[in-house]
Length: 101
Image (tube, rainbow, N blue to C red; front, top):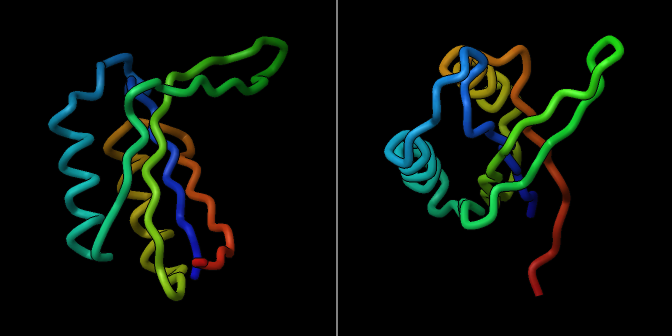
């Protein structure tokens, strides 16, 4: 099994707030495609990164999907669509091997 984690900002690159409907649509779409998805939305995480000489900050949520195998091409295309939708230079999608017990 693999866990795919999608890190999404709660504001677009242009500063607009990402609505609950948008988040629910993304989670619902992933659940429909992969049979389930979990969104960690109750306490948004805070992402920090260094850009030039300053620290940038985002409030993010993480959406998690478990898959047997990772279709890298599909996920790369999906990441590109999210980057355009959220006006981001990069949306992080991370894959971790896991074992169900």
